[in-house]
Length: 81
Image 1 (tube, rainbow, N blue to C red):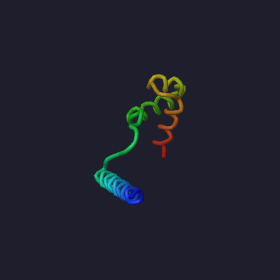
Image 2 (image 1 turned 90 degrees about the vertical axis):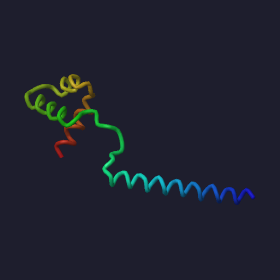
Image 3 (image 1 turned 90 degrees about the horizontal axis):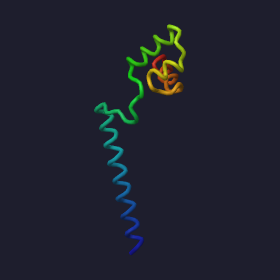
Image 4 (image 1 turned 180 degrees about the vertical axis):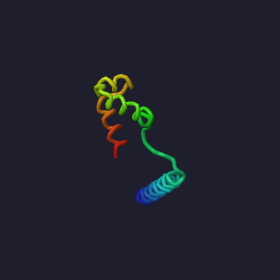
């Protein structure tokens, strides 16, 4: 009896997993983005790059934008690629 309940539970779990994966794939095809939103928008990153190219320190620009120095470096690196 318990074995049958276990088999049904495994089957139900695999069905849930497959439906979830199918839903994620369908959402991605529609253009839905997953994950955290970026701290800095593209215009903010462009402005930061202008300030840094103009001689501002990275730490000062990061403070101005209310983000960490490493966050700013990563955003600059992502847009440079």
